[in-house]
Length: 143
Image 1: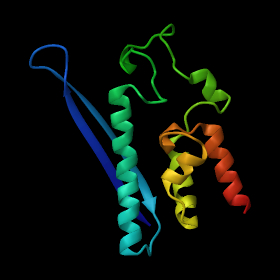
Image 2 (image 1 turned 180 degrees about the horizontal axis):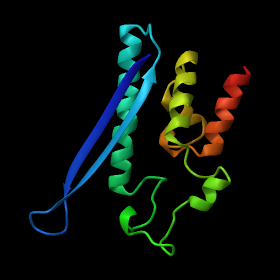
Image 3 (image 1 turned 60 degrees about the vertical axis):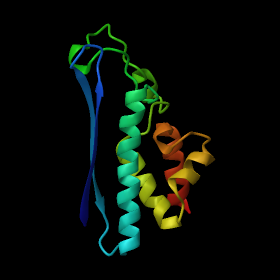
Image 4 (image 1 turned 90 degrees about the vertical axis):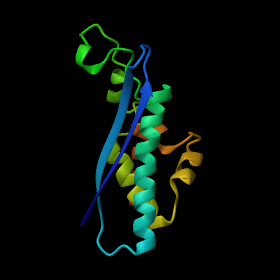
């Protein structure tokens, strides 16, 4: 097994003069041994694209994982909890682990992330729900 660690950081100006906010995401995935150079490059590109798109979505407020305006360290029992209730019903966003497994199965079938997103009519696979991801995984595993 090969391990791939993809990171993306972006610093943007904040409201006050000489201040900024930093956004960062990092993911580590395991890749199977024996990938061709082309397949390895494709996996690296897809993984980095996933991380970059996640940071950009958070930065622009387009993320399905928007937990309100409270920083994580300042959340209280009464702070907005985003889609937490939906998570229990599989309507919440797909987990990174689900998305990684879905991408592995898609690659084995020659299916791109864009094709998956188009099937579920979402802008990219980051917008898949747990249920959509689970349904697609189950369908491919049964085949």
